[in-house]
Image: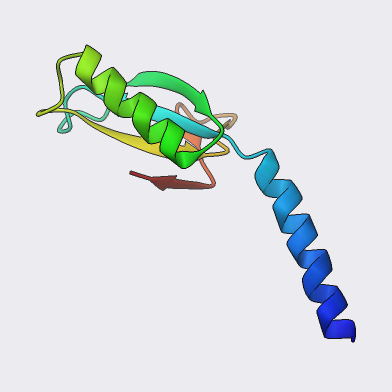
Length: 90
């Protein structure tokens, strides 16, 4: 019975952590120059982040030459110019 209880507790804890997850969209107008980017906001899901990033690429007229990435729970770190994300997805 204990392994089942442990699985339930782990599922509840991991589910609660996911509720606070934020995906941040980073859009690169030129996929070959990642030093220049546009922030397309924070979103509650990966799909919403992807949608916002694609929309921003379209607004910039950069669909064929640009790129994007979505970062999970990104934070500004002291002494570091960019943000550090738990993970990134396209």
